Image 1 (tube, rainbow, N blue to C red):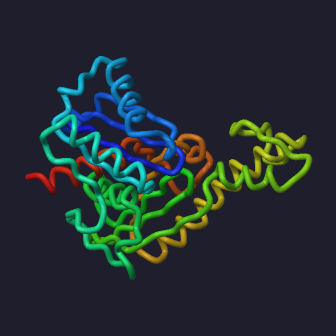
Image 2 (cartoon, rainbow, N blue to C red; image 1 turned 180 degrees about the vertical axis):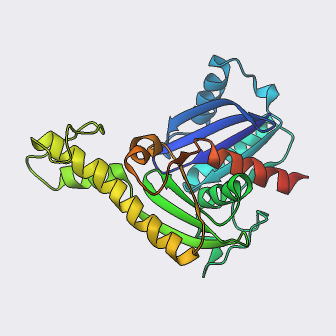
Length: 255
């Protein structure tokens, strides 16, 4: 089975794939301060609790935006399997032309999303990934990565609001009774949920207009199920899109 690892700034998402099927899925807090031994123990425990053995892993694919953890996962992957460990980055074959000014700048997770979306949904396609930042990635009708948009994520935006004010406090991300908040909590909830949904709709429509024609819109990331129900421009949520992209890239680099 293939162990796929997507290391984000806030969370690390892991998936165990048997062919195209995701048979195991976990989220860990990203902690660049932990040691390789601590990370190894966490992974071993996580797999064991759900009944998976290290011996079942026949390959490892990693996308990472945290360099310290990239190295650790490479070392751990090499120690648990004799199969190739593929780290998505400059020089990795993706099968997708990267048409931006400096292809080395684009995050590995964004390329994985674009590769998976092209394969699953066709082109042109726009992926919105709800994570620490809210990222939009655009694939042309010819299957090329054209670039995208990076905006503050929901957590970052609301944390900035709370830390920059004296009287406001954290709230649950649940819809208020009305878009017109009847109190401070509901007013923050309305601004957070509907404000972020409005950001997504506004950017998505601009990107679609640039592409022209029929454009498929796909959402992924930990906060997708929180925001997408309030969006008018995107309705499809693909929880495992990044893991699927890592599988595609792994196979391209090992077969």
